[in-house]
Image 1 (cartoon, one colour):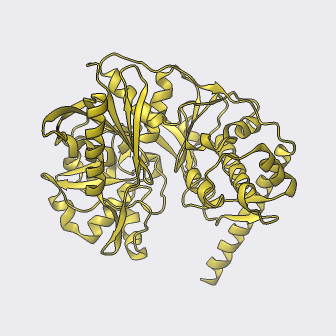
Image 2 (cartoon, rainbow, N blue to C red):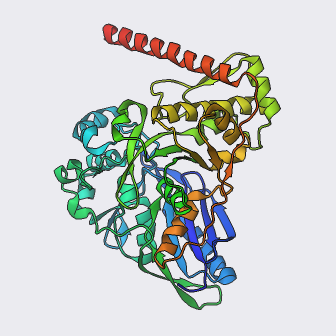
Length: 469
């Protein structure tokens, strides 16, 4: 490998980022943008050309300032592209939209059983195989003429290299397209005749081609392009590369994705957004998730600063609670997020939201039978007390907080370094000291009791509606 740096595009639904990482493992620079999602006809789609142009402009700066000679991609889940030849056949769908009810009734009958895919039936496009079926229902000719179904990171690998490949960590992420135990495509792929549209596999991080980038002075440089990876799986790989083995990863961003490789798949409950993810090396991993970052933003009123222990204590003393859910998916389906107790404003509202996300994480850890050390990665670390509150709630486990909030990007870089037998990253995770907050355990007990009580109401309401129907 050369002495030059790697450009890592960490492509999130809300924020997309470029990180430049040196051969020594240091972050040299970063750039950020917000992807544009627009309405086209009756669906919401990505403005991929605007994002592509930003990526190329950012690369020019990265090459000029840091001598970047390699590109790698880490991408958010639930997203795909249909391509034919050298062009995109249909704009990339926003996964947060539900097919019309009549269409959903038709396509949902085609979904393979959970015992095959370990992929629960989720709303919207959280299973992106469902959105492929939606496009096929809308425009049957699309699937007839497309020559490749590409996962989101592989779409960008192709845009930069011209080579179409598949990658297992993304296909295995609750797509309905992958059967983890069989280590093969699901029956949905074969029943729909899509196997021929699934391109050859390349491991995440593998070099798959070159991209000629024109610089500001008119000269050009050839950049090596590496096959991309699913973002949360990339974070899992990063912490394994640091030496963690038997541990539970809490990867936070728009989603809180919790991996427990020690949990048997038999613990998974299809009704609670529990699934088997698949590592870059084809191994299934028990997973549970909820849209914790999104829920925190909504429930906190968009609070951007750290939350103090004093604000958390005030919320507990006031007996103000936040209950699920403020976004689709997650282990508490069929509920609408709400607040109980006195109305809160400002930092106290943010503290209630922080407690809510920590309690949801704590519940999820119980559901996935986590008893090993916990590693927390990602954006929620920046709230200040999330790791400390979780450490107090999980007193029998050691909780590590990553000093690096960009585990998915660094995992992507680690995959590239591995191609050359290198591993420059050092484990700088710190043990989170449990927050000393009087009344926290009683607060959790009341919160869980309220969940149980409201669950009974949901069942009764559902039974009433069924009788009325």
